[in-house]
Length: 440
Image (cartoon, rainbow, N blue to C red; front, side):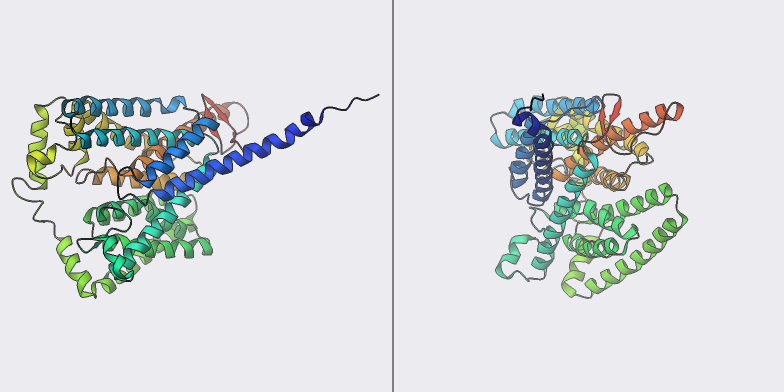
């Protein structure tokens, strides 16, 4: 005699995995949307804040774990945010600085979120995040380029500033900086060796490169050249295939020729040539002089010595007539010595620790290299521009730490298993000191 089990017990194993997959598809879609919304930052709070907040809430409700390896990042961001909180107390009667601090706190939270969510289903989530970012970059680039050549009719001026392409951003410099990572990723697709990927990457790179040029951001020009060269160097060094190394060299040479021809073609347009000549000068009127950009750096750091708690956010321009245009100086001015030194430590620790994981073999190493090179370029660019409220900067920071945490688990597992047992899987999520397989 047999007893049949209740129908709901028999259905459980079937429906539970489907529910899990449905939740993961929802999480993935929200990650894509968050990255895509990063291209639409023309006010505070922006659409990015709405999308990212919704994504964080969904992940928090459905499952999000903070790994031990992320504790240094969390500690530094807490101290960094505390510095702003203490500094703003002295000007708490001003609404804009208070809003600025809240936005800063929230961006720090997004960095922690991006790092934490990559601890599970790393490859798929990272891929969706980068795909959303790439689509956002192409859309922003196309809008900027079409507006520059007045192909959007009366709406063209909406996407221009000082006759420079700003796309869907409030500043051409931010457009240029936002496009660096997608440009590097597109170049990587060309290095992959697969024809379809190379053609797609070449098309994306062409669109993005033109938009970077028409943003007339000197910092973005330099950062893109630096990040692309550094990415190709790391790819060359970490590659074990002579054929792949030869392809990298040939594509690099061909890329230089194509880029040069493209620049020459664009410079044949008088309007482009005149602005390019003006922007290419290393001595802009606002850079030189006692209160020029570089003069303000010296005066600002001298002022920081007398104000351990800073002078508060958005106060620097009231004294010197312009914003710091230096993120490191601004962290001292807006958050005092605490925020200033912690921010400097955060950047240095990320760059030094991150370099080691360039050489850890993971399925996502190519993307990691692109993100790392872009982060280093942004950290250098931050010495001449205010990048502390760039949404994509905190995405870069969080992704780096998240991949370092997973990479650290893989590195530890490989050392353990090299002495006892077979090799561990190549993908997964770091759980404590164990390397667990990814959630499917």
